[in-house]
Length: 116
Length: 344
Figure 1 (tube, each protein chain N blue to C red):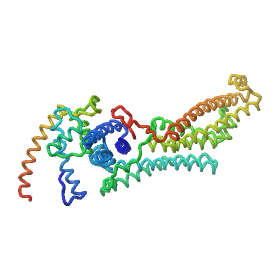
Figure 2 (figure 1 turned 90 degrees about the horizontal axis):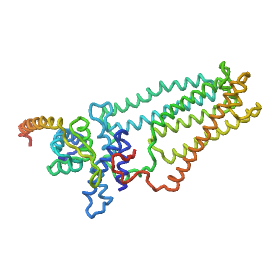
Figure 3 (figure 1 turned 30 degrees about the vertical axis):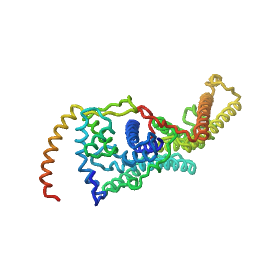
Figure 4 (figure 1 turned 60 degrees about the horizontal axis):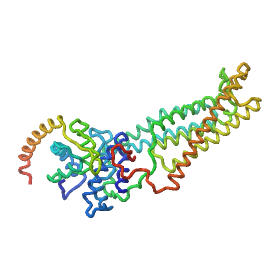
């Protein structure tokens, strides 16, 4: 998350709002293979996107409730873990979202070109 | 790691009961992953646990994020506090009205006054709950959030682990409904002379019950109040266990007195103890009363035995689990499987 020298609750709220949609896209994009929450956090962080556990887990549950992800508990291994994977509906949405994101990013780049 | 269990317990307090166990299992698994990542020399330290917990966030915040998003009258940040306040207000309103009904009955000896007091519950509950909703809706409108946890959240200050078991909400609700119906029965028959009655059929005529019914009503009200407290708290604690034993003993004493009174009355009437014997008198003017008295005596006897046994086990569990073994947590610390019971 961007650390602002003038960080205040208002700024934090705006940054959170800005990131909310992007995090959904980011999470969906990395769930082609089954992953548990902590592994997904690590993968996103490795790609430069920080996300709190307290944000990711509820997000995954919401995406599952919306029918975009499937999940199952795996009790093998060192401890039981809930694994998530994108399903057919999620993949279709991801494709649309990715297109939308690229268009948005292009527009935003233009709009922000003069912002210093 | 106990600190992690205390943290999960605190989150669980604010989660919806239907999803609590599953969500906590997942968070436990993730916290243990995080703990492992923060552990350098093989043995997880308290500092590592604190770091893992802080990364996840303050308990109420984490729990709030599991509530659905949308346009809110009362949003997820305020909802856990709203739930707590609504339970307190509900318990206070119902409890206060019940006490007021009993006081009204004992002072006026008029059932209509008491029924009026009880009927006021219908008015007072929507009024009280409506006021709470209004206050919280205004807080939501002005974006007032109790975010004291955010600033000074220190995992070390989390409450200790509960070692008490969660209550069975269905049983408690049934007990409250049954208790209220029984109370209505007692009040209806008791205050209008029902136990010595002239309702055309004298089946329920019982001078002994007539003597003790106000105390029986007090015992039932205490039971209902305790059930409401238990519903609100969500789990058995030492204080509620002791209170339950107290109300049970009070009921046992009453049942014993009722039974003694019934037996004394029977011998005064020159009758034996068996129900069969009473049927020989069905053709006499007192026939229905005799059968009624004998049936009630049998019911009191069964209730006395059942209550005595359950009270004995309650006392045994209190001594064994709470008084002589206070340090043993009732919750499995290593419980990680989603099917395991969760705190809350």
